Amino acid sequence: MTRLVLVLGDQLSESLSALASGDKANDLVVMAEVAAETDYVRHHPKKIALVLTAMRKFAIRLRALGWTVAYTRLDDPENAGSIPAELLRRADENGSGEVLVTTPGEWRLITSLRDLPLTVRFLPDERFVSRGSDFRRWARGRKQLRMEWFYRDMRRKTGLLMEGDRPAGGKWNYDTENRKGPPTDPAFPAPMRFEPDAITQEVLALVADRFGLNFGSLHPFWFATDRAQAHLALDHFISQALPLFGDYQDAMLSGQRFLYHAVISHYLNIGLLEPLEVCRAAEAAWQQGRVPLNCAEGFIRQIIGWREFVRGIYFLEGPEYTSRNLLDHHRDLPPLYWGAKTRMHCMAEAVSQTREEAYAHHIQRLMVTGNFALLAGVDPQKVHEWYLAVYADAFEWVEAPNTLGMSQFSDGGVVASKPYVSSGSYINRMSDYCSQCSYDVKARTGAQACPFNLLYWHFLDRHRDRFSDNPRMGNMYRTWDRMEDTQRQTVLADADTFLSRLEAGETV
Image (cartoon, rainbow, N blue to C red; front, side, top):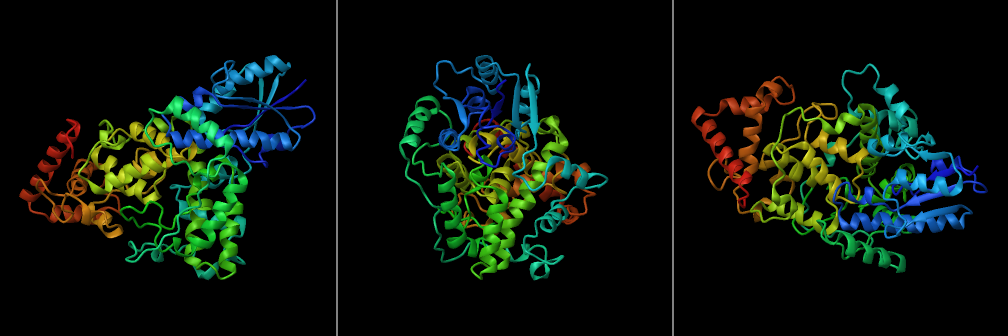
């Protein structure tokens, strides 16, 4: 009996465990572009085009390697509309009763595959350094799960940037060297861009026709869409941008969308690159003297530290994680997230960049769009769906803990030890945004006061019972308490006025 080997759109790796366990001579690879995956949120057109093009090219690659591939295109009239339905269709055509699948990165898909009237063998995703069982063992008995301690274990496990049993340079991380504000005379190397080939052009036409009304610009489309191109993009980053990545990884500049960032997370997250090969390339550049240690370490930490950590959290916490709202926030997502006019220059920059590139770097996501949503009390489910929709690298296993945990604190501290909130002063320190804004970043009250300043104190005040005893937030409350009572009341009243205007749909 022919077995089916399922390959999903974010599993485009020749090392995939389902392929390693399959038999080229007898098994059938099933790949399908389905509406259930393109439509569960209104994905950015660039994201859809990336995944569909990369899928089509990977199917060609698998056939060249000797696999038989049953591939369903999105516009195929016989398309069954979902991954489980496509598996049932192929099983019926081929008399199959068993499916091999590398465990998907979303509980939604795992649950639907478990419900199939077929034998489904779930295999571990061995492209990651830490499997689910490894993370559960690491987490067992710990009062708090903190990335720093997990990251150190990943360094020991992989040997990356290690000198025997000690970290290279004597320190585990170089955060203090990696928080510089924007450079005054920048010359940024743009990410490597690729001209769409015939396969890509065909997909772009399909996406334009079917998803043209989704938020986001489809053109220009310049992403890598196969493994060879993704490696060229990685090599370009290592040689051109990594030497200054660490220093300016938190900086933001108007009109500069990429700075020294790699812009390869979407290639990692769909399988065109694998985490260890990326980290070893960065380590080799440091060993060869081409990259400073702080830059190599800061980059590697994002991959074997943060990326692996949030994946562990996602599977440890289970399917209900995405429904948590422990701060009881329920405000609608403001229209400015979808491109409505705003006087906040930082938000306008981040959202316009997101619309046009399907990309924003981690500080833009955490400390601009995420910070504003948290301060304003936006429903974390709506924030979660927005991030999942608008970024090319957003898949639930990585997006949900970053958004709901790190950014919105809706998990109550599973991911982060405190809410990542700040006034406008942080944005002013790390960017040039405030110098071009209609609001005054130094004003705490009044119509011209930076909304981040008003909402920061409003957030702290309304959540005092929850956070006043947090040792990392004590200074914030002491500063608030030192203000004159009349000033505090003015701040809160001005914040309420701002939130009322926001809810009314006014331009803010």
